Image (tube, rainbow, N blue to C red):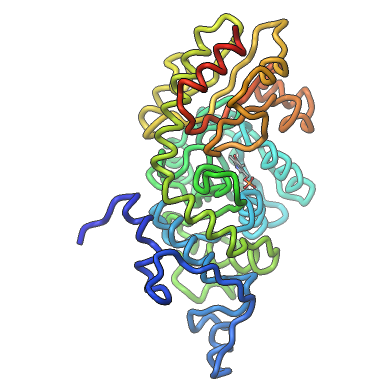
Amino acid sequence: MGKKGFNTTNLHSDRRDNPEHGVLHKAIHTSVAYGYDDARQLAEVFQGKRAGYNYGRQLNPTVSALQNRITAMEDGIATAAFATGMAAIASTLLSLLRQGDHIVSSAYLFGNTNSLFGTLQTLGIEVSFVDATDVSHVESAIQKNTRLVFVETIANPATQIADLKAIGELCEDRNLIYCVDNTMTSPHLFSPKTVAASLIVNSLTKYIGGHGNALGGAVTDTGIYNWSKFTNIYDTYKTQAPELWGITQIKKKGLRDMGASLGPEAAHHLAVGSETLSLRMDKACSNAKILAEYCAQNSKVNRVYYPGLKSHPQHQRAKELFKDFGALFSIDLVDNVDCFDILNKMDNIVSSSNLGDTRSLAIPVAHTIYFEMGAERRASMGIADSMLRFSIGIEDIEDLLQDFQQALA
Ligand SMILES: *Cc1c(COP(=O)(O)O)cnc(C)c1O
């Protein structure tokens, strides 16, 4: 049998894993602990000699089924799921990096990731922030102690697109871990494995879960990075094949020791949500394109940030790499138009901080999610005071258009 398509694989994922009673959805397993009739088997599970469950912080059957779905979606070899996307990022980096290490990061980052990298700096892990839309900036920032490069696919809110393919080649050449946050594109629009990503981060809270009703995060190993060349793997985690060393250390240090584990109820919501990822994303992308194009010709709008516009600096790159241009865009208003007034005139678009929901949401960026970082860093990231970010949902386009028409009249 040939390899099945993205949707078919996902829809039948739980069923293929021989679930109890032939259920089509993996059950929500709430048990924290697992009993063994033979105490020797319990010991073997602890020692990694037998597959099995020992304690809910490390593994849970419902979460494990979700991990398998994400692994299949990203065409990877293994996934660790976490309570949130931030937990996935923090646990991954804290598991793999040590004091004195250096990472190169895109300067265009999700705000909380940016803040987290500031914390890493206080712990003795150096971070260089560069304009990752051009690989040459990443290359010049590499030092002798560089271990990892971190980028997002489409940055939020200004939609810069990292030089994903060239950075992948650079990381392979320099033997660096290439960590790609695929949240904004989701595995439906983009497969970071095709640009040689080592680790793929997804906030499951966003497009994969898709309904704004559960938090979750994941990191997937693509199998591309050769962990036997990585000096930070502890000897105890080198018992299996080298391709599993990285994810094993992330699960042991990140999940078991740091403990931001995903709950089974959330895992179930996220798994069900993921089944319609393609349908939702296609509709949301189509809606976003129409609205971004409307904004681009509106006189109250100074600038539109959307990779689907020909004027976008990385439009060609987005066309080559992604199935579509994403469902998020931002606008800067012209002087004397108040961003709060515009939002308050919208009826179907909710003033809200999330993205990747089925509902359209909007936020005044500088005054909310990017407030804490201060004016200077905002300016360096190209975030204007009047910027509005729209995460477009799957509503009927006529209703969304009407909102924009009356708010920007
Ligand atoms: C939301 C988001 C995160 C964090 O995910 P949470 O699930 O909210 O913790 C990380 N990266 C990107 C690009 C995001 O949009």
